[in-house]
Length: 104
Image 1 (tube, rainbow, N blue to C red):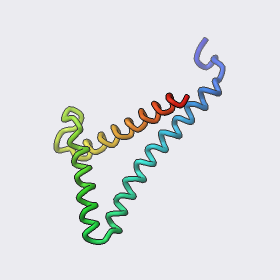
Image 2: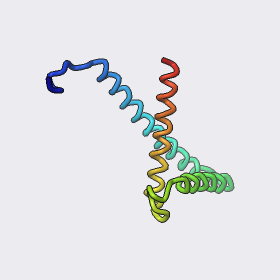
Image 3: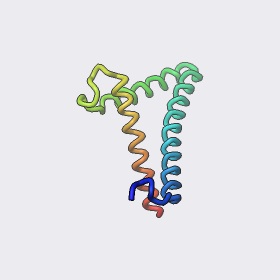
């Protein structure tokens, strides 16, 4: 019997769809948070804007520094930043999955 001969599993399809939606929500939430932080910096008056820029820059530098040189070389800021973001979203997904297991 081939995969196409198997009956359609509606429950599995529903679970997979919900998981995809949740993951998309995580990605959208991450992007939204980043945009809001940038908007806050732009809208803030001095000296608050200076402090907000400094905090964000410090967090970004820390996130890129944590990425292994084997994954992205030191001079590749974009590669390191993308990897740091991917790791953060993956961690969120793991935490959500753990919470879902605990509540089930």
